[in-house]
Amino acid sequence: MSNTTVPVSDSSAEVAGAEIMIDQVVKRYPGQAKPAVEGITLQIPAGKIVMLVGPSGCGKTTTLKMINRLIEPSEGRIVLGGEDVTNMNGDELRRRIGYVIQAGGLFPHMTVATNIGMVPKMLGWDKQRIADRVDELLDLISLDPAVYRDRYPKELSGGQQQRVGVARALAANPPVLLMDEPFGAVDPITRQRLQDELIHIQSEVKKTIVFVTHDFDEAVKLGDWIVVFSEGAEIVQYDTPERILAEPASEFVESFIGSGAGLKQLTLARVDDVELHDCVRARPGDNAKDTLRLVEEARHEHVVVVDDRDRPRQWLTRRQLSRINVIEEHTDPKLPIVGNRATLNDALDTMLVSSAGAALVTGNRDKLLGVIDVETVMTAITAAREAAANASDEDSPIGINTGSIATVDEPAGQSGNETGSAEELR
Image 1 (cartoon, one colour):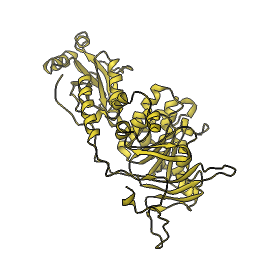
Image 2 (cartoon, rainbow, N blue to C red):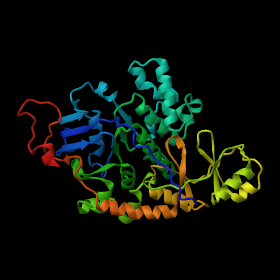
Image 3 (cartoon, rainbow, N blue to C red):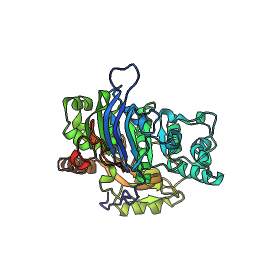
Image 4 (spheres, rainbow, N blue to C red):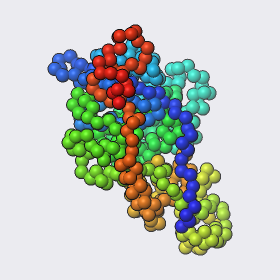
């Protein structure tokens, strides 16, 4: 296999998300002795995925729903992109924030296109603009618009319904996306694919995503930052996945992480953190003998057959090439494929069941980027551990259970800041 490397991601995409500040927020329910959420102040950076994890009943979903005010805070402020939206009309606010729940929450009597275009229609977009946006989003979530736009939810698999739910949440191009255990109702294989799809989508759209989950492995895989809650939405630790695994703040965090913390290190590095091997490519209709000669000259064992959009369709061995005259149009449903934003753990799992002992890596819109093998993964794991040990925490966002942070203009002396400035709280 050649040592030629290829680029695996585009980091130039502009951040389209907005910072969220949950400022000294309390939620009390009538008849309960203790607040469901007690004095939480949480800074959620723009363009990042922040995972909210903790045991059942700890207040993580309540916290999420107070951001778009499906649940109204009893005290405190919600600040979105520097604007205090605590007293804004709730319906208007929710049209500015995408929201995804289990199974996508699609309306069964509406087509995929109508479901996705619902919020843009309420915002007064014209029909052509809505239709263009629907097709753009279906392409983004890797569903062919010509095939899926006129289908109804019952005609989709569970994973497809969930992807359409994500597209609907993105339809009006909101800066913030809230996701309430969106992948909890699908099987493990579909769950992994949906996680990879979200990572790909985020690499393009750069939204601010707040994601509730019970699954710590999912939090490690998806999150730029993780908030670990205990009862009453008490913030036990707010940190990067790397530092939470390497330095849990308490026994509670250790117990929540569970056994096998060392193995979870495999989920910290992603495929686009490593150098990929190049590969020989061919297209349906190419002469098999000519392709075999190219494979032999490159000293490879395989050729990747791609379509007109550079999406992998077959991975043929030298022996298979030698038995045919022309490469046929065919898609192998068992191709070992991983996304460039998949974790090395996912890549290793895929490689272990591959006869090639390697996997094909795809990027945005499923375009082939290169090949990853086991040796590359093992080298990267060592490098990732060293990087985590040397990581700086100077840019960590704020997460506390008391105090207030001045984020919008207020009359002097009325900010309610009892514990100091944002800089002091860091």
